[in-house]
Every structure is written in C-alpha cells, then in structure tokens.
Amino acid sequence: MQKQQLPEKSLHKSQGSEFPAVVVPLSTSASVMLQRNLLYTAVTRAKKLLVLCGSRKALEMCVRNARINQRFSRLAERLNGG
Image (cartoon, rainbow, N blue to C red; front, top):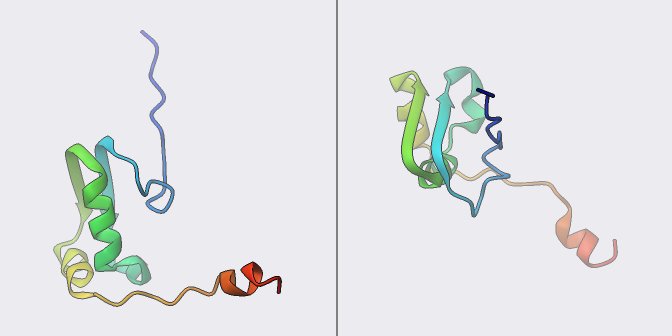
C-alpha cells in the first residue's frame, strides 16, 4: 500500500478552503502569531477534525489578543503605479 501525500498549507494559503483535518501548533515562543483572528481562521478550516497542539497559556494568549498587526505590503502604492 502506498502512502498518500497529504497537502501541507500555511494558514494564509488556506483561506477560503476547508480540510478534513487541521492541526494547529500553539507555542508561546511564536507569540507574534498568537492572534485571535488567525486562530479563528485555522479553526474554521477544519471540516471534521481540529487538533490544537501546545500549551494552555499559548491558547489563552491567542484568544485574548484581538490586535491585528499592521501589514507593510505597499499594496496601495503598487496599485497606484508607485
């Protein structure tokens, strides 16, 4: 029997998609990524199974952090021909 290769996607690349199972690592060492909106996106991608791996403290930090980091993509500048 051959192993089936499962798709690996980052949270950002998975937006708008659903997957049968989603594994979400939560670590206080990656505190910049512990944001409520990112957790919500991860949780809503799981169709049947969601696995949260990590510490309770990291999950609490994630849920409490409603801040959305400002992005510096220069998208508006690029769209305006800059």
